[in-house]
Image 1: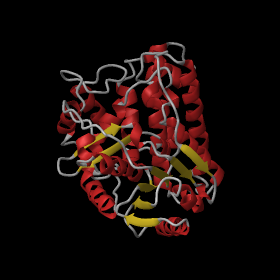
Image 2: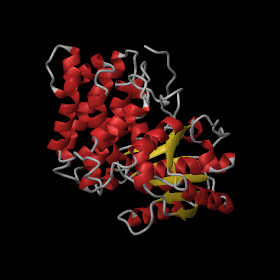
Image 3: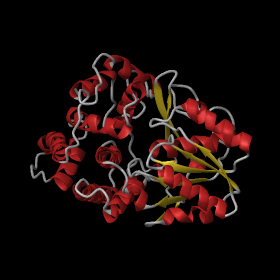
Length: 396
């Protein structure tokens, strides 16, 4: 196993109705909160009202910032930062999915540390600005997908340059995550399908990109994959099932917490390949992963065949004993699962043409370089521009 350091400092407050406790919880960390969320006019409007009332009942002042987009724009986040500082806020309450929570991390840390949100992201050979601290964050996920509610990562998009990138900082770890399945049950079917596959993408990224071995991490990952698969079948037939929503919430949280990679931390090649799809076409990230995963698994099956084969056998019922053959079967098994849950999508299905494949591949190589024509997250093997174009081709 690889040496590692890991902790889980975010407090989880789970259960139906826990949203009403936000005032009591938030008052431990500040006196004036910014509620950061999506644009008004959605099913979340009553939840915003509930949060605001709870905060005021606890004696707190409230500023509401609406309009954070899916694939949050750095330009929008910078507006929120200006308001946060002008109003003298001292904490952020993030109500939304990964986009809102990621955006809120940039609000809290950039407001504290100065500059613009885009200053801090990984971008080619530029040295990102470093945070000096962050204001407290309370995350309230409205969908189980990215796991952003309990981790230090965050992705934003520069709408002016069509670039999407990320940064990580322990300063941005949410203090508390309030996970209320009463909110999660409102997620519609297509978003639920995308979110389950997003969880799956997180679980397999490190599993299939590390050359180190950790049976503990493998078994934890495999268990969560099986849990996602079992509950995926249940939730698409009963969207308001609170118990199932709760199971998926835990898979989302721990599937991207580092817990799933203890002793064999890997990299995120699939996410790097997906990012231009979101940046150029505003494709929701989870839907982008639905498109990319089968193609990536097919094209890279010969990179670490024993890892591909292990996942195929332990989670997808493959009995073939030859690793090379079993590895090639994984993409087909995953595709079968996506189709069985009516989740499978291609680039054509989401309206993305094939005229920017080379440009998008160039962006990945430029933004996440290792050297030469490799990317920053080499994965099972160094991923070249040609590899990226081939994956896009297989996504059509």
